[in-house]
Length: 108
Image (cartoon, rainbow, N blue to C red; front, side):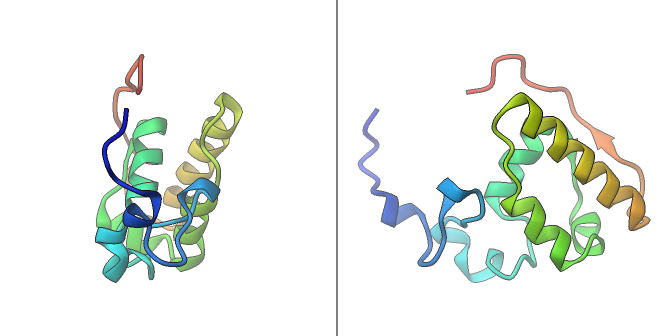
């Protein structure tokens, strides 16, 4: 499917979604410093079925936020590892309970 969008239109300068840690151009002004949850992380959260509040995101600290953006979450093993890492970050930083969401049985 051709949407008419070019890769450079979507990715902010210096971003790279293919390596798992880029940001979309529309979020470049606030996501690059990880103040807010970037779309690349939101997509991974959907994949692992965990809801992460902005308060939790802030409390896990910048190094962990960067890790969540860069960790791979494509294969079954990567997804399981990502979920374990995220749960550990939430629990070890006293960020409240881990809130799970139902997983889509046929994600796109």
